[in-house]
Amino acid sequence: MKLNQIPKNKMKNYAPYFEEYTYARKNIDTLKNLEFGTLWVEDVKAPELLLYQLPWVNMFAGNSENSNVNLLFEKVPLFELIIYPDNKWKTRIHDHFKNELQEITRFTFNPASLNLDKIRGILSELPMGLELKRIDVKSARYIEDHLHRYSRFFGSPEEFVRTGIGFCVADGDKIASQAGSFMPPTEYLEFQVNTDPVYQNRGLATLVSAKLLEYCLVNGFIPVWDAHNDNSIRLAYSLGFSNPQKWDCFFHTGGLERPDVI
Image (cartoon, rainbow, N blue to C red; front, side, top):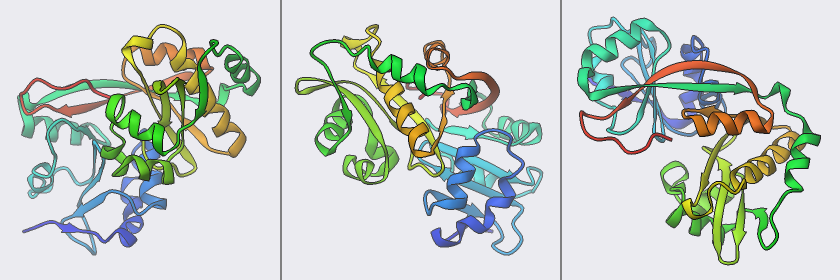
């Protein structure tokens, strides 16, 4: 048996198979609304095994006890997240990959408590000499080289500017910090924030995040903040997010030393 890759214009038809997920809902919304990523199934008409692959993310659905499930596992690249809908999938994934996995706990925050006045108050605290601006092609190319690889998630810095949304703090010709959409937004916009180590501990991540939050609230996007470390958790609370939902996933290390997890 071999897996079938679903044409991009047909992928949304398989979104109901992923409805059992209670987290990572932004990814399912992407499957429903954008021709983005790659979808594999073992049976086009009545699939029991499904793998939805986004940049850096692998999501499983269907029957984890199907005898051909290893065909999906073989598609998972090194140094990417593995997301599963329930404990049956978790056990099957762990039994297959064994010591090639690292378990990661993440927290998705509730945006209902965000307050536009509070966010705009944060924006009034921009230090003298720095500029807070929308990311354009020039700044996106700088960020690609120094802070965050847009090409991994959008294909290129230019494509990020065309289909994504982001803001940055500029110090002359340098970009000190950026907050942008992790992947192309739908009604949801998931945050990706990066700061040059030289500029850390100056509140710049808070500023760029507040600017992107203001954009979301004014333009009707639902902001998604998914944190994996203490710094990201503290930043979420300082911006006004609340009530984080804890969830677990795996990171495929292949038994090798892993890079920092986003």
